[in-house]
Image (cartoon, rainbow, N blue to C red; front, side):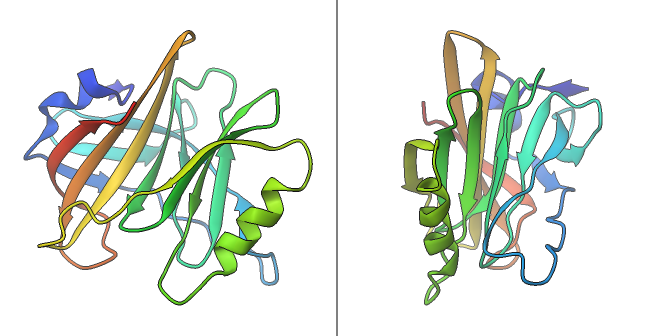
Length: 184
């Protein structure tokens, strides 16, 4: 059964498997390093936690792609936005005055193209960055990653939850949830 990912719906998920069934689409050649890409999505938390594309889903998923910045906008009827996995990338929330956006800014060591493209985008006119920060490796003793969910279901109060996952390989996505944190 689909849920809005927030502290209430995610609180009992520690120890469960998390699977993200949404992959970034390959951008066209020469398309640059800061691209709008988002997918209408839903999350099922019955048993394992599964993030999947769903045309009738109530969320917006912003996928991750190494070396790129992907961003998406909240759409009519969206009650949440999410992105991941994170193990050192940056997340940003921004607005154009009418919509709220979320960006996943790749920060692989030794590369800066995604960050430079993001900086150019934010100066392109009409964009106000509300907040940006690094989401580091959640467990430095094991392969791990984080997923972040912005709850937009209450118009006067938003919430931000972080789900930390032990993964099988560095840069991996799916794994076992070991922590759920309220960020905001």
